[in-house]
Length: 240
Image (cartoon, rainbow, N blue to C red):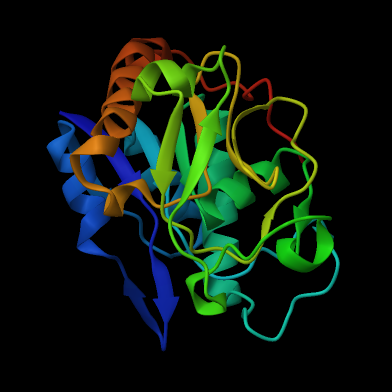
């Protein structure tokens, strides 16, 4: 089976993971592997076992911020932020396909050289609330006509959930925007061959409609798997 790592939250000294992520990966035909938060050697050894990675939702991104964090979002525990960054870098170096979800999308963008609005409602002109905590609800996103995401999901527009306070500001050079909300907030991006995808919404909570997104991850992991028999080289879009 195709082995897909899944990152976790870190709360009160415990790693926690919504079963929704596990079900989504398993239903798409992958073997979900929960990522440990350990020392560098442990993380790199775990990355060497993987065929792909899901970076899950979480708290605030603190790298490459525009603006200051608002009071209603907390910084991640350094245990999580350090572990996530190390694992994601290791997977990028190995050329693994990655699906970044919400915080995971923002982390992917920041590590690859993009920037993040600390509070998109405050910092991006014309932005609406995008957090349920601030009264937001499900909303439409428009998928770019020439995007892989539009092909994968077979839709021009979608109703998605909204659970974020931060958002992508400047998209990293290796990505192109593949979906936006009506207020122009970036809701998804992808690289040229769609081995790297980021979505600002939570597809793991959207049922069968979003299963093609996870199946795409499994398919990309299956296609790239034989190429990783050779010594590892840096991923061409990896940023320091």
